[in-house]
Length: 578
Ligand code: GDP
Image (cartoon, rainbow, N blue to C red; front, top):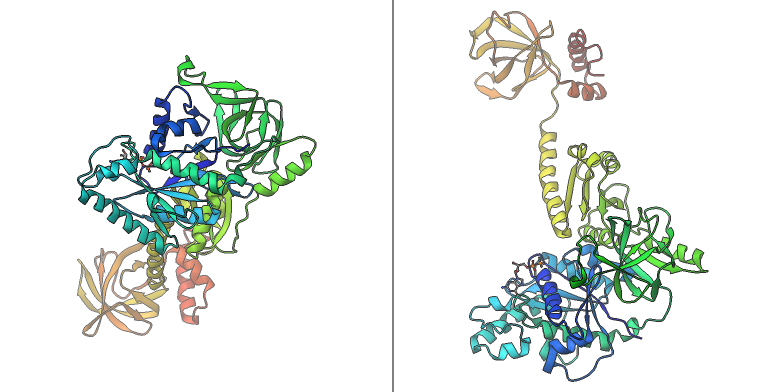
């Protein structure tokens, strides 16, 4: 027996993944008679009979492959990175590229994922209908539609394909238009199409079935054995409690079977209470009654499993039927659920919704040379934020979340650190890098701005130049230093005015040190009221700075001034600066 290959659709946002899947579904739904499509949970099955019908004259032989099973959730990278036995769950992939836009960052990211998992794929060069001068040809195979186009339009299609071919070459692939390829093992097939108009759908299905038949036959053999699948999603379902949506890729699952499912902690051992499939639309009388219960199901299929104790089941983890080999299966599930990501002493915290997506994020970070301190599955919790706060390097004090939410109790704490979430890996990394650059600049500026040092000065009675707005007076710096911008502390603890400028001889300067005599302009005071000639004043030090100063190796004189300031401050606040 050969099962249907599992196909995932990926590509840059807006290039047409959803439209393509909808069209495939719609095209086969329209054929209600024999070989109509079967709706699965999380997947759409296009049986081989439907493919024969859709392809018509394009196909002149029979295939052993019983059809194609498309994983339904496009653009959700967690699904393209789903694993089965440590490899990719998808046997084949369709990489959608907008022919007018070409290869974009997310396309490259998708290619990296496919390369890493060694998943064979084809390219759907979508939106040919937007090429200038294109004549409709709705629902026709591409190779017929192209012949009906004007010479310039045909050329234009080829030019655009060539641009993609060039880019792919730089990425290490030899590619060509599918109808010009002789050896599909050496060349990546490009199928020009319009998902919107249904052009090229037939060609795409044909190439996929052909590839599966020729190169995947061995992988697609399924024995009548215990079922093995991958958890797509863990979902609360009314009347059923927590259920798991599963793609069954091997063997059979039956009601009552003991299954082992991956979880955050120890694998879950439970019994299948019900296997559910979607009800055909025309049998669905009550929208709440969406499922049909079946006794058994064979690979490949998308199903929902209801069973006790699924609360902690983990998306992306294995679900395997066990009989008398329970211990062995538990060990296998434990091993396959483990997170194998290299972590460092110093680095960022990453979170994702499934194992595959976590690995995808980790992989891209590694390419960028960005270290990871902690990697885990699940939404961003308060604990993650507490952990992030302990990261020493402020540039790494962040959480990067891929396809995850910030939990309500974490939301309150979220302002304490920086969190980047997105469902596109490159966006997370791009945003983080941008923030990092900004943060670096900020840190440098902070460093340059120094801390406020202690200072003490006396207003010289013989040098009162102006009484107010601003007051301008001559001073002698008795200890430490004074700086432009600093506020003035009186011996009674009141803070008054602000040093607006300092003039030394003919020059404006930023600071004056012990022993210097300078003229200062003070905003916000009137000589004779808030400040008086002949009196001594201090620099007002923010408490935060004082704490640092107390730990620093200050000179004897600086330390003395600091102690005097502290004495003034502690009259009101006994532990100031400690
Ligand atoms: P996704 O983000 O990759 O899933 O992209 P969508 O399938 O949502 O498509 C993005 C936009 O492109 C939508 O407005 C679609 O209607 C449009 N679109 C998709 N395929 C085609 C196509 O073949 N031709 C044209 N003209 N528009 C398309």
